[in-house]
Amino acid sequence: MNNIVIIGSTGAIGAAFTRYYAGLDTSPAVYALSRSGVPADDARVTALPMDITDESSVAQAAAALEATPLHAVILATGVLHDNASLQPEKSLRDIDADNLARVFSINTVGPALVMKHFLPLLDRNNRALFCALSARVGSISDNRLGGWYAYRASMAALNMLIRTAAVEMKRRNPQAIILGLHPGTVDSALSRPFQRQVPDGKLFTADTAVARMAAVLEAAGTDDSGKCLAWDGREITP
Ligand SMILES: NC(=O)c1ccc[n+]([C@@H]2O[C@H](COP(=O)([O-])OP(=O)(O)OC[C@H]3O[C@@H](n4cnc5c(N)ncnc54)[C@H](OP(=O)(O)O)[C@@H]3O)[C@@H](O)[C@H]2O)c1
Image 1 (cartoon, rainbow, N blue to C red):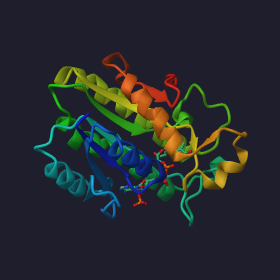
Image 2 (image 1 turned 120 degrees about the vertical axis):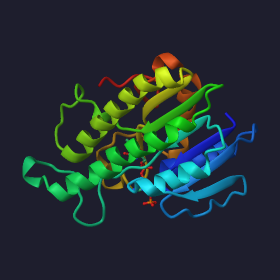
Image 3 (image 1 turned 45 degrees about the horizontal axis):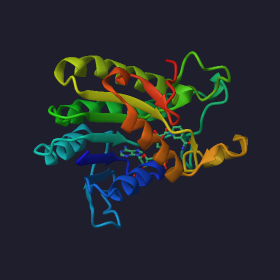
Image 4 (image 1 turned 90 degrees about the horizontal axis):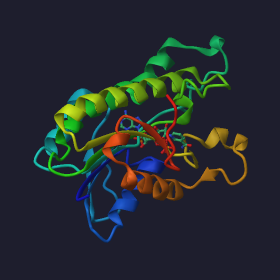
């Protein structure tokens, strides 16, 4: 994989993916995209600004990479809560239209725009991957706990977008592999308020989760396209 794009490179998982690929002996070109466009403290990484909720920003970043055949695009953006009014709902009573729309805008609509503008940039002559960080809680069949309406629904919809794009890409670029990836529970700003519920040994550092997910990406084939895979390589049922 020569040309790798990480989107959401300021997040815990995005930063760990950036470190991981920039550190490989094969010296791939790594492009780190984030809202702020802050340069990574690594000369091997090229930083670019992109806000996934703004289509002109997504189109502009894609245009900057138009001449570069991409071998991996990893989308590591997402929201679960903020420091203000956005918190995962415990009950129907907590549903708020603005919060629901905001979570969908970042977790579902943004990734759809990224797929629209970046999937055509995947290399057609070599194996090329697109993966979006998703979440096990986006599985409809696995939902026994309830709650977290906006996040769960936005991730279930993201998984459907991935599956639908995989069907289209089979025709347009048969070597492309389009995946959702569940990282496990990872120590980050996103998971921090909920870490007390995590059993011992089940909270990964971002670097550990990324090493495991990179192995999953390495092993993935075109038959996997459209699936959501967990950090251990197992498929998450839709
Ligand atoms: N951590 C976990 O346990 C866990 C579990 C399952 C799934 N996931 C998924 O993994 C992904 C990454 O999570 P994380 O734990 O690394 O969270 P994080 O550290 O909070 O990172 C989230 C990233 O999303 C970016 N982002 C938010 N809105 C954006 C926008 N409009 N445009 C561009 N970037 C935007 C943030 O950018 P700024 O720095 O600019 O805010 C940040 O880089 C998410 O999709 C999450 O749902 C995480």
